Length: 144
Image (cartoon, rainbow, N blue to C red; front, side, top):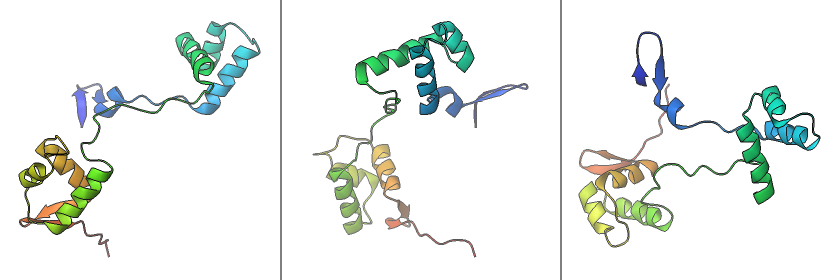
């Protein structure tokens, strides 16, 4: 579904948020060219179709961390239920399949401060679905 659209083009939401990192091989080639002084940073940037500021950031990353690998993505909201809490949620729903989202949230209010939507998302990650007044595991039947 487009985030913005008109007759000539449309912009997808995924295109606006996440930019892909440059491959490690490209990073190595750029650094090798800079180290061997193949040309100025501007010339190297034009050769590899990257910006000079990216080359400066890459050199700084190598100097500070000793690696060229991109940093881990830390975007987005962190899940309310993770680790031990997620296991306890799974156990609770298995024992109480007819409980509502509000009841589940109240049960975990001492350990997890979250919304009803967060409870729903955690149950979705655990593959629980609400069907006919109770939670069930998703069936894995395939097409015949």
